[in-house]
Length: 235
Image (cartoon, rainbow, N blue to C red; front, side, top):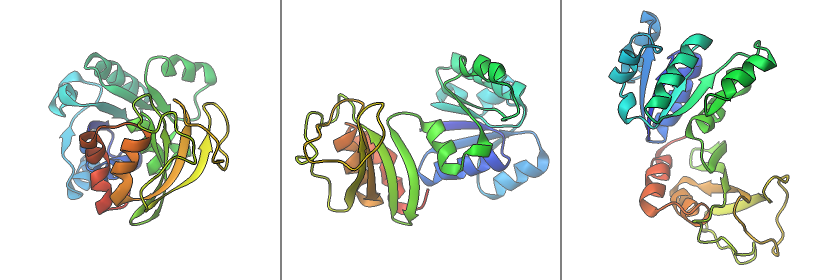
């Protein structure tokens, strides 16, 4: 996937590193000279400019991007950038500080795909917000292991199976199961898998592609693109 992230400070740069480690393409937009140098020293492409200006977004590749992450500390910049990105068909994720009142939050939340409070999120949480969808990283356990939460879709080959019939690769284990809108719990063999059900799986990076195909219904090509790079590094 292609990401444009506005703001190469602490929040933006950490999210960019996590996404790049998974094999995604990330371009940053930043105005501060020292921050730009730090990001470029880490070999990120950086567009120098104001992320609230359409010209800067175009220079960063917004026309071909899948997601815009507006992660600066300036709410007005973030919101303006998201509104521009919406016209290009991008998923929009906007940073907001906890200091804003609830009615202000609701106003902005209605206009973008997701609002995040970086004070409450680690790098994995920010990455989940940017990626969206039916697969959510929960934690990195070791350099080759990750805990992921996956949501069963209508494309999943296992849709309609019971937990007892479900067979995952040898290097993947189900840790918890939850019916749609219900808490996660230890699964029983008689539970049936239906659209919207969630499974928390501990998996080696080498088998994440296969797990995605089984539980979410991603095509082999899409699953490999999303999970293949995970075998090479920590998120």
